[in-house]
Amino acid sequence: RATELAEEQGVKNAKFTVMNALEMEFPDNTFDIVWACESGEHMPDKEAYINEMMRVLKPGGKFVMATWCQRDDREVPFTKKDEKDLRFLYEEWTHPYFISIEKYAELIDATGVMNEVTTAD
Image (tube, rainbow, N blue to C red; front, side, top):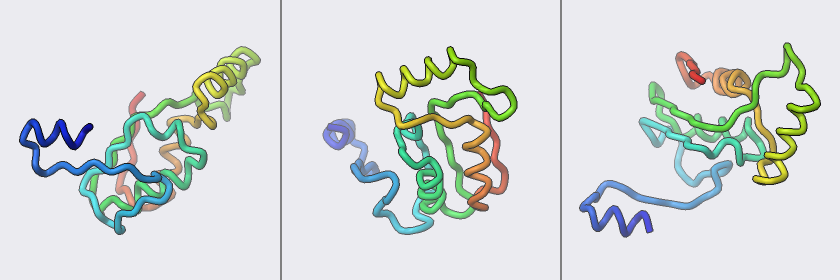
């Protein structure tokens, strides 16, 4: 449907493809900008997901991500209520698990692709 809408609106430089985000078919260094919108929370392997996003990003490119996160529980562990709330989201919405924004930043930084990793909540 996206392809049809783009054609109807005269957008000729857009291509819509469905593929596994953990094993994309694009060559390394394909995109100037990689935009990941509400997909990270669905990925069963967050590190593989980030590595794949960074693989297809050109050197000096921009990476933008909007995703569901949990708070960083390394300093203040989750309460029983926190655990119950997370379990509800995992079961009701079939998310594999969430990680914190801090953990995402660490995964991105560990790839060595981005010069500076910044986050906003």
